[in-house]
Amino acid sequence: QVQLVESGGGLVQAGGSLRLSCAASGRTFSNYNMGWFRQAPGKEREFVARISWGGGRTSYADSVDGRFTISRDNAKNTVYLQMNSLKPEDAAVYYCAAAARDGTQYNYWGQGTQVTVSS
Image (cartoon, rainbow, N blue to C red; front, side):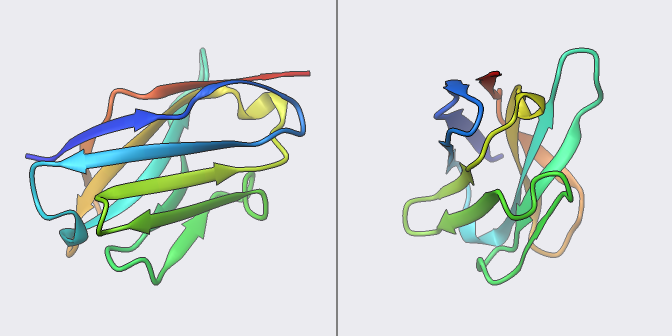
């Protein structure tokens, strides 16, 4: 089992920045690819960003590419999502998730952290 706990959400004005953190415990963090997802009220959960187990590969949803940066610190068992130039449409509950190094399915999920962006 992998336990994931997100933090760093909050209220920010449009154009502002937030950094989300996701602390992992339970198993060897570096064995997992990590992802960030989000879900806004009335909408389906959507992919935001992912990072490979070693941190060498990242990918982003088109809607956040160039504004968000995913990173990880395997020594601290933590993955981050730096969010800049936030827009009202970025408001959502943000979740981190873990997928096995050799897999693509995200089997472990955190409880989420709320991000609110005021216009």
